[in-house]
Length: 94
Image 1 (cartoon, rainbow, N blue to C red):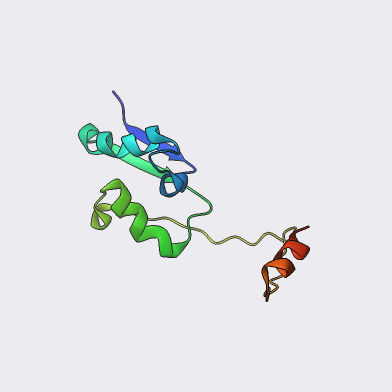
Image 2 (cartoon, rainbow, N blue to C red):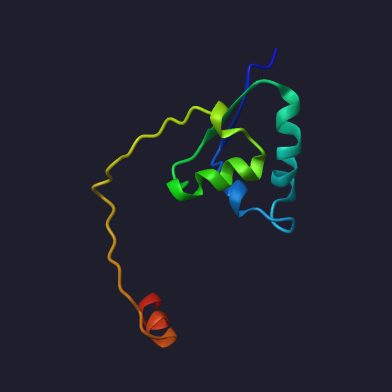
């Protein structure tokens, strides 16, 4: 018997369109028919996209348990530069 379905990198569901990964969009039509536990794994879904995620998959948010853990990666850093023009953006990227 199937106990659960796990989706790794589930944030790509929000990136999918009918032209990009149409099979991913088709998943949402099948999810509710199984009646089993669904587990969605992601390390990059921002908090402000959670509501959109549940809406996109037609999942009831009140029935979900969200487990998240903040991590610190000492080997990763970034700097934010505000570009004034498109030319400046191209200069920074290149």
